[in-house]
Length: 157
Image 1 (cartoon, rainbow, N blue to C red):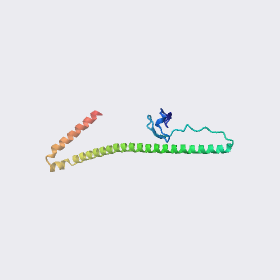
Image 2 (tube, rainbow, N blue to C red; image 1 turned 90 degrees about the vertical axis):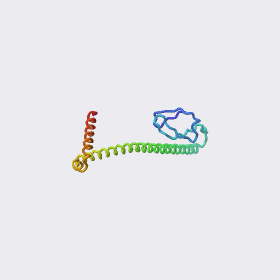
Image 3 (cartoon, rainbow, N blue to C red; image 1 turned 120 degrees about the vertical axis):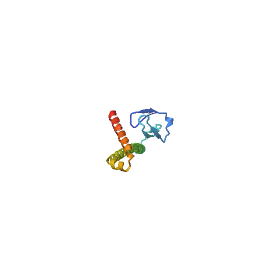
Image 4 (cartoon, rainbow, N blue to C red; image 1 turned 30 degrees about the vertical axis):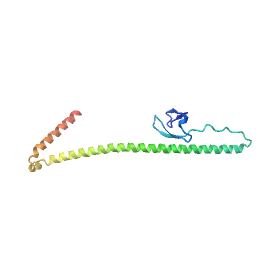
């Protein structure tokens, strides 16, 4: 049997013995969509010619209504499955975006804090050297290292 994906981009030839009469979930290899497929019953009995046409039409209408209800239920099940899959995909995307944004936020906070510390140390350099005399060499080396990093970054750009 040939089954068409709901996205209508791909058709699949599937052995009818793989799909039970009550139907099953199928997944498209192209768009990764999952949907519920129920095979149509092709072994229906042929209609008999009756003299009472109005009764036969009523029976046919009832059968058509029942089939329409079955089709609507199948479509609703497929929509529920599709919406659940879309919700799961959105949650996965949101998690990966939130992890990336958290890492980026932490990096920005760390950079701003480091720059603020350097500015504070530079502002209070003289009083700190008066209190801690050995700090002058350490601060000088720190500022030279920062200057070298600045020149390195400018050369990269």
